[in-house]
Length: 303
Image (tube, rainbow, N blue to C red):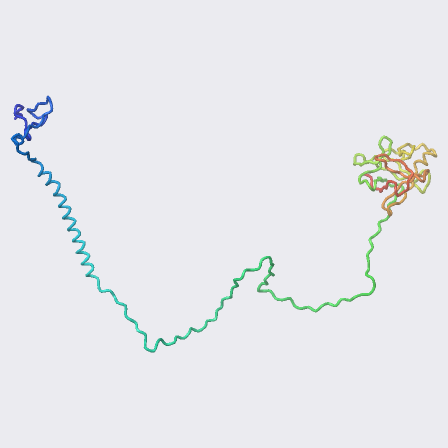
C-alpha cells in the first residue's frame, strides 16, 4: 500500500530532521528545548554513557591480550630452561707429587734446504756466466814451443807502379792529375781544360804521333779533325791544320817529362825548352816554369 505522505514527520530528541516528511524545508530546524532544562533541573546527556562505553571496551580487550601474551612467553622460557641439562664441569687435573717427568727432545732432522742470503745484492757488478750441467773444464794442453830465428824479419815492399808514358800510335785522353774528370780538349780551335762527358769525348781524344820536329818527342793529332794538331801560337795552345812549315812542326812538338815519381807527365815545348804547358783557369798555354810546377797530366783511355 502506498506510503501516507500526510503522517507526522519522525521526531528525534524533540526535533524533526530536515527533509523528513512533515518537516519544514524553508529554513534550518533547531532542536527544541528539553523539558527538564526548562523546569530548572540539570539536563542529562543520554549519549554520554554510550560514548564512554564504546571507548574503554577496546582498550581493556587489548590490555588483556598483552597480559596473556607475556604470560605465555614466560611459561615457554621456563619450560625450555628446565629441559636443558646441567652445565658440564671441567675435571680437575692434578700433577703428580714428583712433578712432570723430563721429556726427551725430538731427534734432529737434517735439513735439505739451501740457506738463502738476505743481504742486499751488490749493485753495478756483472756476474760471471754460470756453466751448464754438461760443462767440463777444457783439457790441459802443454805449451807449444816456438822456434825463434835470428836475423831481421822479412819485409814485403809494395810493388812500384810503372811510370806513365805515351805510346806512339795510341789514342789517349789527357786528364789533369789534380782535377778529376777534367781533360784537354779543343773547342773553337782553342785548347781547353774542362770536365768532359761522353758527348764531348771526341773533342778530347788525340792520336799520339811521332814528334813532327824530332823522334824523341810527340805530337797530338785530333781524332775528329784529322790533319789538325795541338800547337802553341802566341804562347796559347790552339788546334791548327798542319801546313808542313818548319815553324808549325816546332810549335806542334812536345816532350813528355815524368814527374811525381812516375805518376804523371809534364809537357815541355820543343822549341821553348824552358816553357811547359800550364792550365790558366780553363785555358791552356805555355809558361816559363819548371816541370814540377807545370800542370800534371795522366794518360787515360778515350771516352
